Image (tube, rainbow, N blue to C red; front, side, top):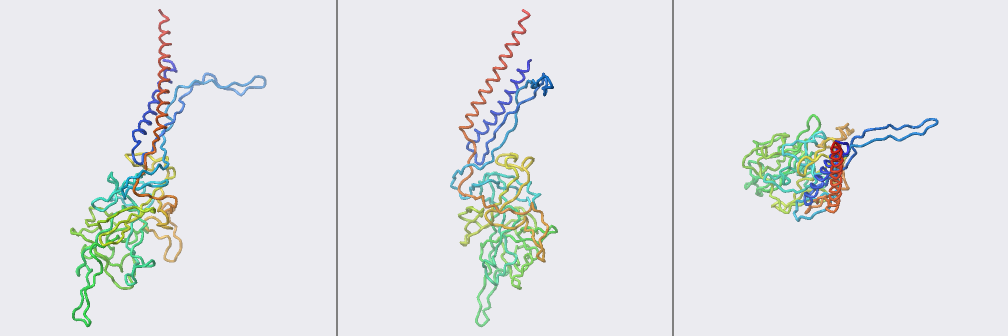
Amino acid sequence: MTGAMYAAIGGLKTHMSNLNVIGNNIANVNTFGYKAGRMTFKESLYTTSRAGSNGGATAGGNNPSQIGYGCSVGSIDLNMSPSTYAPTGRGLDVYMDGEGFYMFGNKDDVIQDAGDLTKLNLSRVGDLWIDPDGYICNHQGAVLFGFARVQNPNYDPSKGESGDNPKTIVSSQLTPLRVPLSAARPTEENGGLVPGDATANPPTEDVLRWEEGEPVYPVLGAATEEGYHLNNYVDPDTTKDGTGVYDYANQGGGTGGGTTTTGIGYNTSLQAVAKNQDPLTSETMKALHVQLKSVSVEKNGAITGLAPNGDTVVLGYIAVANVDSSDGVTHIDGPYYKAMGGAGKIRVSALNGVLENAYLSNQDAKDDQGNDLDLNPANAILNDKDIELINRGLEASSTDVANEFTEMIKTQRGYQANTRIITVTDSMLEELVNMKR
């Protein structure tokens, strides 16, 4: 066969690959979060029949003479630019207005530093819901990662809650987001009921230290050798027979005003408590979570809801991942991407001042003397003010049907032209064979 035949065959294969890309784009025209692909062509091999020369003192030069052998696939790229907002009406459907990714993983994934971020899958689809264990999941069963609210280890209950003495703070550990647990009915045994003294003058009444069903947030565990303070649901210093009763005075070195004040027990019938620094999974934490109403997502990523006692519960904040080259992420399955070769490193952001000057896993940026510690800059949490999250909607597919149909016509005509080369070459070879007759 001649070179023209091989070139045309290469053209047919390449145009068919382009048609596959176009077909996939059109098939996903209504797929939320889909990023359209684009294929580019590149020239194939060349043979040189005459080399070029620069010329001499008396003769001029000449250009090289080369013949190409068709084309091949140059690249297949994803356009990761944000697409348009598609309203759905669901409070936990979230649209990301800006560049970045949600992070999803398993309930037992423990993320301590930037090196662990590759365990998580990246996605642009925020179709969230609360599973029966209270975790914030997508509809593929993966758990959403973010920054949870935890009990303030330095909270002084004797002073009351205020801006300078909050009951809860935002942990900088990247963790599966979960609805807080539900406080148990206060009793003498769990420390929630202080009996009154009828014989006193004047008599004293019973005192409840918490209300049944009140939200119970995780606590910060003791620092590890690397300086991490990880979230868990049990006080690392004080636990009463596995009932999950907390001691505010001993949470991470807090003072509690100098007195021991028992915290809130959670409502559980199985009395299975996560050990210090164990991942918060349904296997290690068999407890009832607060049944929230009117759950929604704020612009800064806060997931809020109303508890049965009327409290507004902020269970955590959605974290956003960015990579060095968002167009270089690898599409693995469904709505998920991985930051593999071509994407660079992953950096984690909190939105609109939620965590400023913070490092992953609650690492202390300064020592006891106030000196700056030499921490890994990759563990720093960025403060992204350009991204907003909008609930009650998802990101529409980036497929442009008009553009895809135009590309389909061009591909079809290119395919036809290459078939014509094959038929013409075949006719010429037929004439050559018939010369013997």
